[in-house]
Length: 135
Image (cartoon, rainbow, N blue to C red):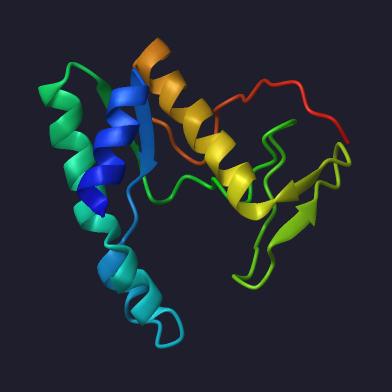
């Protein structure tokens, strides 16, 4: 399954951005361990990286400490903390309501494109995210 999906993503996109997750640390959570292990995230990102190289695509990996989930993809506001059970949230700065995973995906893409455009190391601070968002 990971081979089919990684091949599809590489074939359909010039740039693929992913988060470098600490899978070994995440598996220590007894509630999530089986789900995380079943997802094979480490193997999936490894396949994305080598297939991108084979087919002349660009693969960008964003560091695990980048606040992709907690950063508003519209205005850049960063929440202090966000427990795993929070699946959606409203930005106190701009009022945009975010789905946790969709917001993270937008931020990971923006960070990956910033790395490509500016050659910068993306950290939790200092990246400006610009997009048109609706409330």
